[in-house]
Structures are given as structure tokens and as C-alpha cells.
Image 1 (cartoon, rainbow, N blue to C red):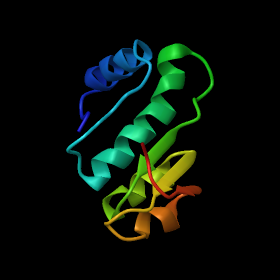
Image 2 (image 1 turned 90 degrees about the vertical axis):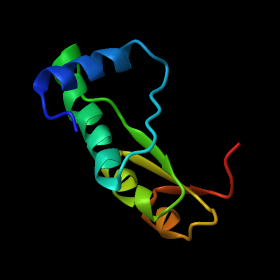
Image 3 (image 1 turned 60 degrees about the vertical axis):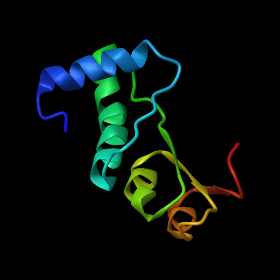
Image 4 (image 1 turned 45 degrees about the vertical axis):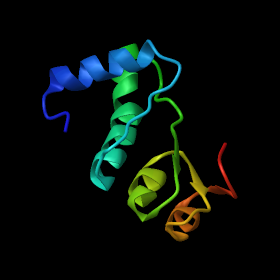
Length: 95
């Protein structure tokens, strides 16, 4: 994922044009890689300091992403408590 530098740069530039970025159907590794790319890559694209990243997850497949983000938010859900245990903050539900 994002193996080419030009794809990383273009993705980050697209991120700057939006209010939020939502990625779905990713593996746990890919989820964490997106957070890391945004955290480390934005400072190179914008010339400013690295942004604060946040991630929201509700299952074990979100643990790596939650740990990679500056702020991890775990949601109590049907998939167990792994996300809640790995998160900085936990919420009972998300609407």
C-alpha cells in the first residue's frame, strides 16, 4: 500500500482538500500505515509540524491503528474489548 512515493504525496494532498478521511476495507497493517503516513508525511507536504492524528475503532483489527495514532478512541462493541483496551479513550457507542 502506497509503495510509490508519488502515490503517497498525492494521497496526502487529497487529504488536505477534505474535512475528514475515511478508509474502509483495509487490513490492520494498512490501517496503521495510513495513520503513520498522515502523521509523518503531512509535515513534508505542508512544511508545517506533524499533525495530531486520531483513530476510532471497535475491534481487534483496529488495535494497531489505535496504537499508531496520537489519540486512539475505542468503542465498546460486539467484537470484544481489544480496541477499548488499546485506546486512550473509550466510549460506549458511536452515533
